[in-house]
Image 1 (cartoon, rainbow over the protein chains, first blue to last red):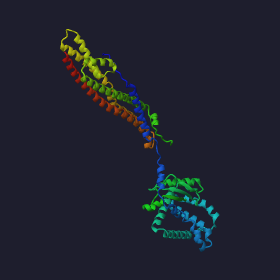
Image 2: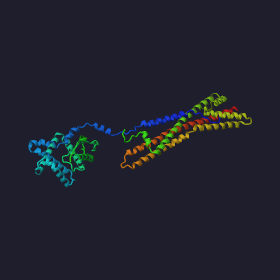
Image 3: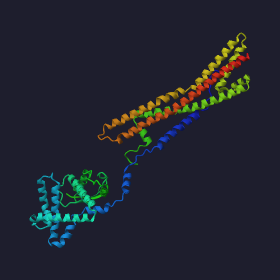
Image 4: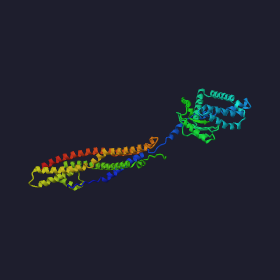
Length: 251
Length: 224
């Protein structure tokens, strides 16, 4: 009687139940959580897809204004002009460059000019230096006229803003190009750039047209990233035009 | 999947430091045992309550003590706690009654002592493992927390070698460390709930047994 023998028929069922509970718990942990890391870029792409912008129409207008018009306009006026026109264009670029890059010392510039002179002689006749300065001013005037016309065509205020920030962006990028010592003057690299609101540049920068010099291309691409944040207009409606840019980078 | 980090659950556990793995293993073992006892106690306590109710009904319905005694004897180890108390008291009473030179008070005292002893043993059986549940309930959160703290310490220590600290460097370490806390809590919460529930049930059974002992003593006294 005092010998204690307890009948416990539940041992095995209790053990089985305990195991079942743990299996449930771990399957909850395993399936209840999404353990996989999701990558954010997919979302970003969708966001851009939502905004239908008139960008492609406007950007091309902004980009290539200087080069094409001069021959068309000059052709009726003077017969000699078309031959000299590309030369003058180069001079103009040179001037712009001088204005932009104040840091570069005069010696380097002279060297560049020496380097360039052979290319010029290939293209045009020698008697440029005397005629240079008046032509430059003429070119300037013509470009101003053109710009004025375009502005008149478009909504004047918007177009002005676009042009202004276009120039700001290009000059900021140009300032960030590291070394352009042995790059030909007329080199031009064209990039496709997606700009986020706030002026950051997305990683998917594409080279649309190479300048012909790989080192310059990569320097220009780096400069685009270094120039972040790009200057963007305050007005959101105008800033929207700068979402996707065809950026041409010249020395 | 991408190659950078795939935080699968098994991956987390396998990549944890050895101490954290030990803690997790200990917690798993403890949790298994505590759930085993939870179910075991659930069945035993429920059966004890049912058997006591059934025996009480039978006892008060027809008070033929010999018949009840025979029934308890045949039940053997399947007998309920109250049945055991009853048969211990009755057999001691019968033995003492056979001796001629024992007075009535001594007979009653002997029967009460026998019942008291069986009662103690039954209570011990019913309360067994409850203290284990109480210990698991109070300690395993700390064990889990220890594993977590250790894991996080490691995660931050490895951060010191990296120049640019990002959340991605610490996040996997912290996640794996927090698994230890989750396991500790998983072991502790049911253990605490079960302990409170079963302690309450057992104390109710105890008071039921005691009142039965008193009443049965009265019945025995009346028979003299």
